[in-house]
Amino acid sequence: MVNYSKYLFTLAFLFLAIATNAQSNLVNRDKEICRITLENYLKQWDEEVILNRIEGSKATYSNNTLSFEIKAPNAQVILNAQRGLFKENDEDVLDMFYDQDMIALQQERLLKATSQFLKDFHTYLPKLETNEHINFIYQVGDKEKKDKEGNTIRLKGAAKRQYNLNIEWKMSDVKALASGDINNNEFAQRATISK
Image 1 (cartoon, helix red, strand yellow):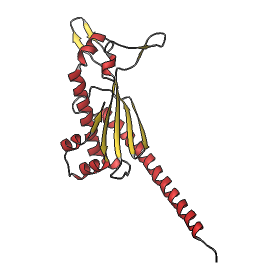
Image 2 (tube, helix red, strand yellow; image 1 turned 90 degrees about the vertical axis):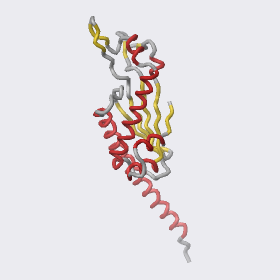
Image 3 (spheres, rainbow, N blue to C red; image 1 turned 45 degrees about the vertical axis):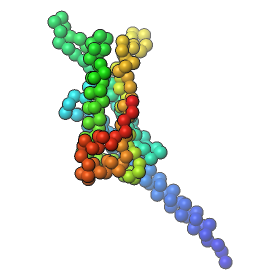
Image 4 (cartoon, one colour; image 1 turned 180 degrees about the vertical axis):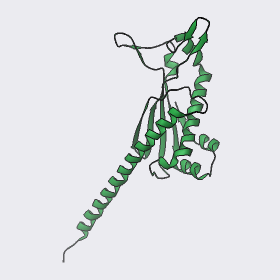
């Protein structure tokens, strides 16, 4: 009599690998749809000014975490003055404008825009399990400037304006927000935030 158990085990393993690959392909497809939607959403955000430009994003999925890295340099600062305009390359104006209170406001508004995105567009997210996480990493700092030789110019105070804002939620919290079990304020309070 032939023992078919090793063949059945191989066949089961093959089906599992195909199913896992299909799930991975779905996540990869959906994460790109979500990334593009997120980037456009942030660029079109018309509530409180978020004090950032959105210049690009990248999505990755690994270790049960869906991550979006968003390049979000500081917004241009233009002030009317008696003798013309101050622009973003005026070091003193940037240094004065982006004080600690303004940076805290910037971070608060990025959090608000992100949580509102998840509420409005949760159906665009890949189908993740409730124990998985979603992470948004905002890369904030002065927009890169180059001199005539191509060297990067660092403005005064640039170091204090440069940071990564990491905002992470459990997918169970995202699902609770989507179903109306928690409101926006409760959802924002459940975020894990690091800088």
